[in-house]
Length: 533
Image (cartoon, rainbow, N blue to C red; front, top):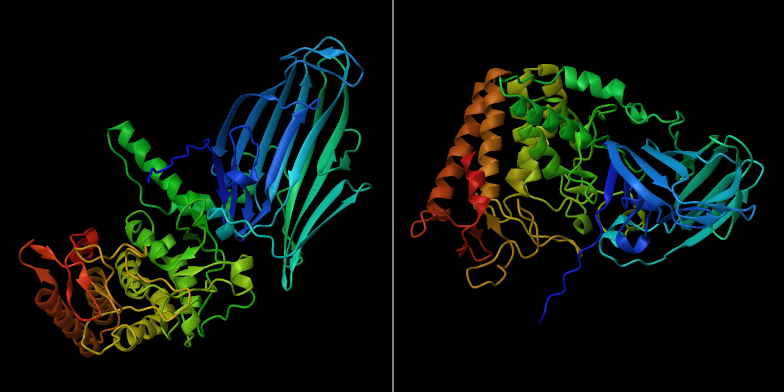
């Protein structure tokens, strides 16, 4: 069977917190190309087209200015204006600025370079399908609710609203023009414009999200590309507190600076859906940041990804670790729910806020189907203390570490043999719940799937590292030597089991894991690298 490979257009992606804008280099948005404006896992804008005089403009250039802002420069093709006179090509210039921040702030500026007055229209077509991000990513669009649109001509406000039972999302488009008012018809805003020679016309168009009836405070300042979304007052202290690296090589210095900017670009805050309970004694991270798992499809709270990123960034800053640990402690499981692979003390895998999650069609509210996030949580607490020695912060997290340790001893070891195993209990749960969680990631040497429960080598190594790390904190920070030695002994015993049960002499490496019958999974994989802990 031949494989068909489709090469799609290059997208421009801007993002801030849990907002994502995916558009073509022309600024155009097409729903069938996985483009759109997303917030809280819902696509509020699925289509966007811009026309000058009923024709698509010619793109001169476009670029991202920051991670959350971009600029587009256009001119015109030849067309007949509304007064019946020809408007030659390249006689107009249109600049479009877009900035994300609790919505999208657009600034349009049109300049007439002719030596005579002109009449024309600018047309902006907007569509909203309110598709769940999971549906968009999988190209399986399905309408489950009702969409209504209304136009307030006096206030130049367009409202698109989606309702599916208790799940309600809306987006409001507000036009603020320098002269005249737009007309709305057939999904398009039309701006009639008269410009004298060398005159300019401008307008702002605000895309204001409304989440469960609450309108978000979309950024109001025009052309605010550099200090976009009022994040500078948080970013600057974060950068100031970060470790400084300086070498005699400017290329290395630039690379380090870019890496720091990229890390900050992944920042997001914890947004907890109303129906998600908060763990007792947990203190929400408030203004703290944590790293998103990846842009654009994984801008959410992922336990494993947030913790690994935090660990790898500790030499630069412990701020991500603090935010991640606070957020994950808030979401730590306190009960049992097999439909979400939830058990007391377990650290969550993924939290989603879209229609599929809120209506119970996927288990991500949050979903706990990961084994490694729980020992990674303990390891990150211990490693963070090594860097900042802030005992007050560790005191806040200690109850959550102890709950995580209880999960490791009870539910992490399914059959009580001292080895960590996983097996989903959820109808739509993940088959694999280790470092590699793709359904085909863990295979026997003949390509067959192992039977559950599976004990991967990486999960064993992380538990050893977690217990040794927390034992170090108990010893050095709290002076609890008896409890520390108990954990050291448990870690040493598991390390011995790894050598006894997992070492593959023929290949001089460790088995990928053990299957449900405790038979070795004879596949060479990078999972064994986690045993370096």
